[in-house]
Image 1 (cartoon, rainbow, N blue to C red):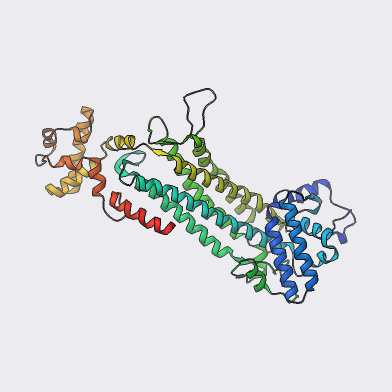
Image 2 (cartoon, rainbow, N blue to C red):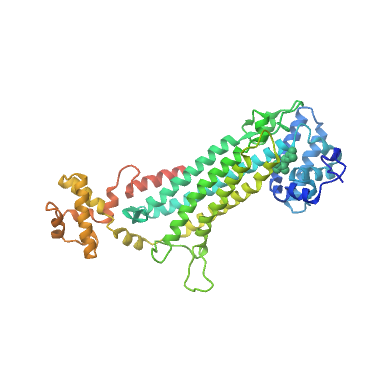
Length: 459
Ligand code: ARG
């Protein structure tokens, strides 16, 4: 038999393969709550504008709540023959309220309906991601506050560069995740216009009130162009793009945790709750969560590329290609939320090994720049010459198998006769970080200021 919703001109129903490729209810059922919210707002508007009787509208709005409770209670039977969530809900509504259900789709199309539902869904995900990011920032901030003056090696090229503070390193990620939140907030602002009322593509002849449905659904305003309203998926692409950048940040932090948790570094100990063992090697404590988060960007960026590829080249307005938007966004959103939660737990629970951090901070001639700066400041050497003198001292220390502070004053003076005992003060890692007081620098005083500022911002 032909389709109950659109089968009027059809004599036969779809082939099984046609049904299989066409049906989306197996995944777009995740839009149920948004679909019902959109339909309830639409019905209220149809009544307010006199297009629908108040009694029909009330029956529809009540009936939709029943459908929602059935879906949420797992008592709803989804039918692939009814293609998608929109027609599944409407068909069930008809069973509950009868003929009135058939009036709900007045002045509406599945094209503006799905665009509305999906915007609402993505908006919820943006809000959830923002909350997850805020929680992660708080966990990082707690680490930063506890270790504002703990020294550790700062790296470039993963080679020891200069000592930094643990708090400063943690705050670097607080900044990154703050930018991620900013990108999501920007995306939300542009997303928050309502497509409902664009109908199939051209608008409608019914005297609808698009301001009312927009307001009802928490949108700032209706979208201004009906063609754009049903064909735009920028909002999903912006969410995916922001999610990809965030996933990239999460992946970088994960990589650091994997390195830091290794026996060679021992900078951190991940809690039992966020570590796993090996089935053969009894000594193992593996950072699986960090590794999985590091990998999740593959899915999230993959979804972004997939949706860009679906959308490129689509003529206005709606094409069925766009049904392929949802699974990508669902999977990316799920991956992001899980990653944020796992990272927050890992960071909150992890123990930084202050002793190991400090020991490592002094290795690898990490205060060579401080020595060169001292030669400039105290002896008036041009920086390039100071760099050269310091390089000779590094070579001397390396030849002796010691670090810079272990050289004797005589050895120092062999490189430059003007060097005095006072030089040893700048060779200590604590003096080194304390001296880097420039705005945005690693000095503990600066870190404490930034911690206070972020605490205020995060509330
Ligand atoms: N299931 C469809 C989608 O996800 C809903 C819109 C269908 N519209 C249409 N004219 N076939 O995009």
